[in-house]
Length: 180
Image 1: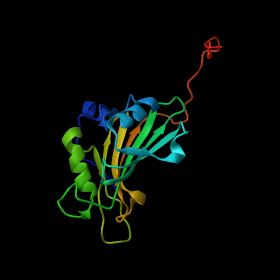
Image 2: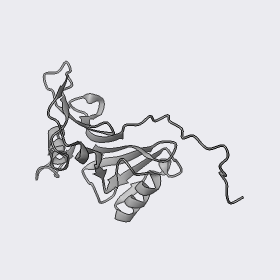
Image 3: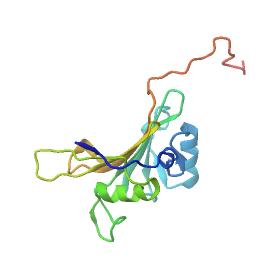
């Protein structure tokens, strides 16, 4: 069940950044250089040689997160960024309490304004939670739980609205290897 909330400020949502990385204009080199510059992240060995995905584990930054993950298009431009939270943290309260989607959304609302829609996944259980979405024609930001389940870990997903299978056209007359 999805319900639109209010008309949000599209300019703020389109200018969103994650860890100082602008979501709409970043590419693989920008992401890697920014994360190495600010420090506090270890890149997963399985993604060091990959061009389509980067996965980083926090060593001393973002201690309330399991990992952050970046996915790229074939051109190297950023397609999505995901922050997977741990089940419990002292970030939102000064005690080890479960992280809620509402608390994460409230933190994002300070910079993005109110969410453009809210979704309440219904299950057979009596307990429900709310998923929050900020969306424009260029970007979509989702605060939800893994598997859309009440006991799933909270994540924030930043997605650029583009065709992930788009391959840029290359001019046949262009010199692709100028060094040779």
